[in-house]
Amino acid sequence: MDLLVLIVHVLAAAAIIGLVLVQHGKGADVGAAFGTGSAGSVFGSAGSANFLSRLTAGLAVLFFCTSIGLSFLSNKKSIGKGVMSSPPAATQPAGKADVPAAPAVKGDVKVDAPAAPGVPAAPAGAGPAGEGKK
Image 1 (tube, rainbow, N blue to C red):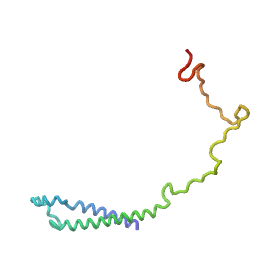
Image 2 (cartoon, rainbow, N blue to C red):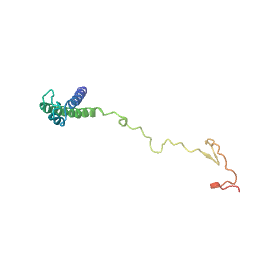
Image 3 (cartoon, rainbow, N blue to C red):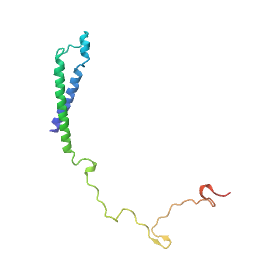
């Protein structure tokens, strides 16, 4: 069903493009009055306007109907697709976060604490904002 509607949709679009390219504009009639010969066409000088414009209008209605049909058909298929359709991940109960526990302290020495990286000491007498030895 979807494929059939899609094929009709593409054929209607191609037919509309072809019909619009075949038709001549309203300004071409003025040129025919001065003898340029552009009014002669397959359907006669005036008969093509009504036939081609009505056929274009009918194909435009068909194109819009197939567009609406394709949108309804794709709406039915979209259930369960996408990133947000999956259920959320299981959450942990309150109080059991993934944050590591603080290391235990015995007196003044931390038991499980890893060694801190070495930080260079400031020169003696250096204070904030460039105050130092004079």
